[in-house]
Amino acid sequence: MDDKTHEHTNGLPDIISSSLDDAAARINEDFADTPDLVMRYFTIGQTGEKALLLYIAGLTDKNSIHHDVLRPLQQKGSGQPGDELTIEIGHIVQSDKWSILEINVLQGNSLLFVNGRDEAFILDTRGWPQRNIEDPQMEPSLKGAHQGLLETGEQSIAMIRRYIPNRDLKMKRLTVGRRGQTTVTIIYLEDVADEEFVTLLTERIQALDVDVIINTGELAEFIEDNPYSLFPQYIMTERPDSAASQLLQGRCAVVVDRSPSVLIAPTTFFSYFQSIDDYSTRWSIATFLRLLRLFAFLTAAFLPGLYIAIVSYHIEIIPMKLLLTLGESRGQVPFQPFVEAVFMEITLEMLREAGVRLPAPVGQTVGIVGGIVIGQAVVQAGLISNIMVIVVAFTAISSFILPNYDIVAAVRLTRFALMILAWLFGFVGLIIGMMTMLAHLLSLKSLGMPYASPLGPVRFADWKDTLIRVPLWLMGSRPKGTTPKQDKRQGQTRLKEGKE
Image (cartoon, rainbow, N blue to C red; front, side, top):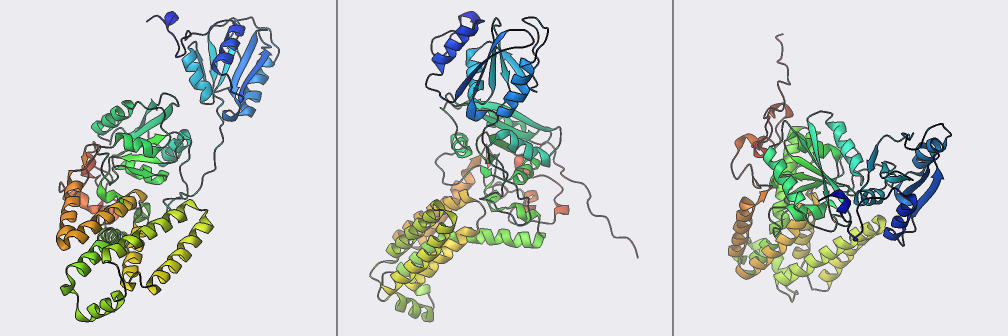
């Protein structure tokens, strides 16, 4: 189609007029009821041409506009109309398409219209409000960096690039959304990452047809392999050092502008039990902590259901002394163990949500005081047994140990399903639930990669950095599950001991 006949979304031509008055009229029509839109008329001192500077006040750097744009343009000179303009802005693009100009002004750039010229200048003067670099709120670290990613995509990319200042760190920049175009950047190491992962991730993002992507969580839900699974299939991190570590293993990072979280793909089930501190502490301590997290996962998922199954169906397996204690504790309780467990678990979830939504000092107080008061009150009232309070408290502590919020949310929902199965069928129900969950994990994929790797399929070489963490100097190769182009990660790092 010829550009001259191309129409904009409102039915008007998509090309601009060389008349400044026509351009101003078009702006007033397209941006009606936009009080923060600034239209600044002035005369270019070098050429004597009339000009119009257009920008949105809250999205631009006003110092840059006054010092780098207006001041040099208004200086006197001896040029002729049509000559090149002196603008002290690093990035300048010219365009005659209204659609492109409209997107840029809404993204914080300034537009310069000059009377008699059929192209406008797009000036990079973006300067929207943003916060300072702070500690990551969801992923605190004892020995790692105390820097969290920001809502500005360019700054987040720069923070990741500081950890990998290498020319093989490549990026694919995509635009998603019809109403609010969101910049989505795929980052990967060209000589390490599998091209199939990069291509598949790019195709899934390009296929999105939505109004706007607000945050990284929305993008993850749109592009994940199994949207009905309770388990997360991508890692979301707000730590640049964690993102860099994943890139070095052959994975991809997806930076969503306006969101402080980075999406890591593909991932495995065991990745959610790893922390950046695991590589800053001794390997023996890191291994113990990972096994402790796996035990905490099993406890948080199965302990309430195990209690319900034993008390309701299999009381004969309890030792006599413990049975007497249990009978004394439950003697005055009028409800079945399942009702006890559901009541306490829902109460715990309500306290957890109240602690999250309230301001930090108030939230901590509500969580501690509410837990103590409610727990003591229901026991004294004879509604809940002491043993049930202990089970629920131990379950809550176990869920707090897990380092990833998404896997904790999955465990919370899985726990209720297992409680129902234990109430209906006892140990048989728990075994059915366990086998169903195991089969689901084995069938699940993350960007086409097996979710249960390296246990299903079995890859013994990757066991060095899953449930255990061997010394760093023994991890010479990258994980096989990501099918990296370059398998070798490091060479000989320890010198042999010399003879005495």
